[in-house]
Image 1 (cartoon, helix red, strand yellow):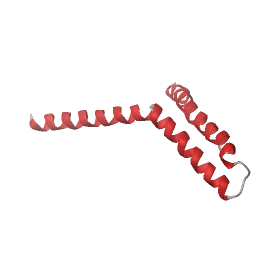
Image 2 (cartoon, one colour; image 1 turned 90 degrees about the horizontal axis):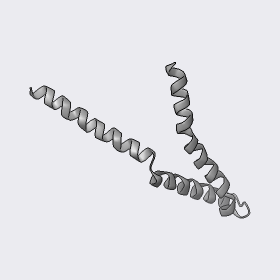
Image 3 (cartoon, rainbow, N blue to C red; image 1 turned 45 degrees about the horizontal axis):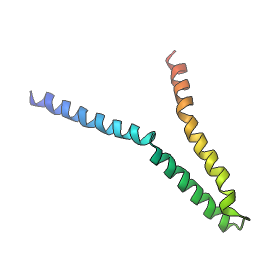
Image 4 (cartoon, rainbow, N blue to C red; image 1 turned 90 degrees about the vertical axis):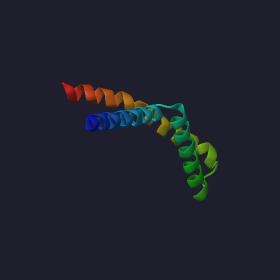
Length: 85
């Protein structure tokens, strides 16, 4: 009985980890951090190469990146439904 109980415990632990990973993937915290880090990275880069108004110009690519990541789950679902046919 012990090997079965150990296997069941491992499966339950794995399921908890998978559920936490899924929750993180769709969380607003993750989305905000992606937006923030993208904006900061692009802003510093534009400033380093002496673009006028680097922080204002960094808004568009940061928002575009965020929108692209938000549409990926939709396209993933479409792809999965197409592949499963």
